[in-house]
Image 1 (spheres, one colour):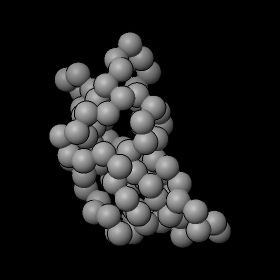
Image 2 (image 1 turned 60 degrees about the vertical axis):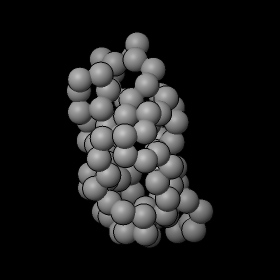
Image 3 (image 1 turned 180 degrees about the horizontal axis):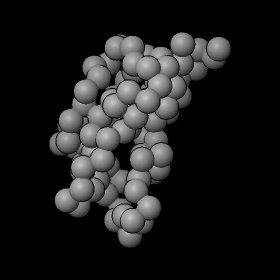
Image 4 (image 1 turned 120 degrees about the vertical axis):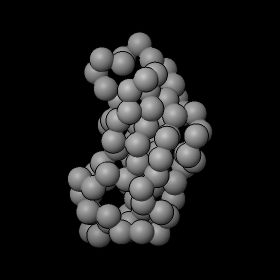
Length: 86
């Protein structure tokens, strides 16, 4: 396994029906920095317009760093977090 962090990218979670929307907000983080999470676990929730979307952990590993804070606006394509696979 690689020790280099994987970036959790907003493009992985952007819904197909919101392709004309350019910004979203992280409404809640469920996993703190340094915490372990399994692939598929919900790590945060984002708000796009009036729709809430759960963001899942792409691999089993550790959330090394949150790149976007709660209530922060981010653009489509911006990374949300760095994770280190186990």
